[in-house]
Each structure stands twice: as C-alpha cells, then as structure tokens.
Amino acid sequence: MIREIEHSRYVMGNLAYGSDLLNSLTYTCEKENISLGRLEVIGAVQKARIGYYLQDKKIYKSFELNEPMEITSLIGNISIKDGKPFVHVHINLANAEDNVLGGHLMEGTIVFAAEFIIQAFEGPEFIREFDDHTKLALWK
Ligand code: ZN
Image (tube, rainbow, N blue to C red):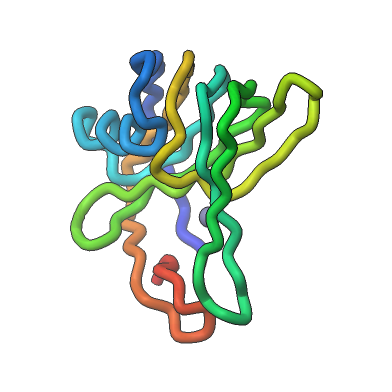
C-alpha cells in the first residue's frame, strides 16, 4: 500500500522533564491535531522501557533499562488507531559505557530532556487495523 503526500508542516519543541516519552508524544499530536506524519527526537532519558516483538508467539517482550541514557536516535510515525492519533516509535539509547540498545518504545520511558521535530502531513488517512499474519495493527 503506497499513497502520496503533498503537503506538510513542522512542529518543533521539547518535552517536560519527568514526563513519559511515549505519552508526551501522543499528547503533543492530539493537542496539535496531528493524525498523520513522522517524528524524530534527540535528548536523554532517566530510564526506559523498550519492546521486542516475538514473531513466533505474537507478543511483545519488554525490557526495563533502569539507568540514565542518551537518545542517540528516535524515529516514528503517526497514524490512526481506534479513531485516535497513534504514535509508533523506535528508539536507540546509549548508556554510560556507550553500549547502545534499541527497540519499540513503550510506556515507562521517562524524559530527562527531549527535543522533538514532528512533520505533520495533510493527506489520506492511514488507519491501523488488525493484521492476521502478524497479529499487529498495521496500515490498511
Ligand atoms: Zn514497533
């Protein structure tokens, strides 16, 4: 499935110290009326929770990373799920030993400092629906 996007605008800002990274990004999209787009973040977290999808079991395994880390990369997209803006984000994090870990961003990742850029698209709706092969909510 491929659709062309013709118009976009940018929203840029930072997230509050101590806030939940995923929830804050979702809230920002709701507040700015963004239901289609892409985003990136750099900054640091106080701790993190990331996921890995077990393709055979069709469930997310989650990892708690209880240490301060740099957000070396965060990319994501925004579409519609259950009638609301849904933010899908993957993150890479570096710890004090410069080990880098990454995965699917989950609730429980706490902001130390986070600067975001969201590119909001005006275009056709992208709606997530249950996919039988993966058991994930994918674009239809
Ligand atoms: Zn993911």
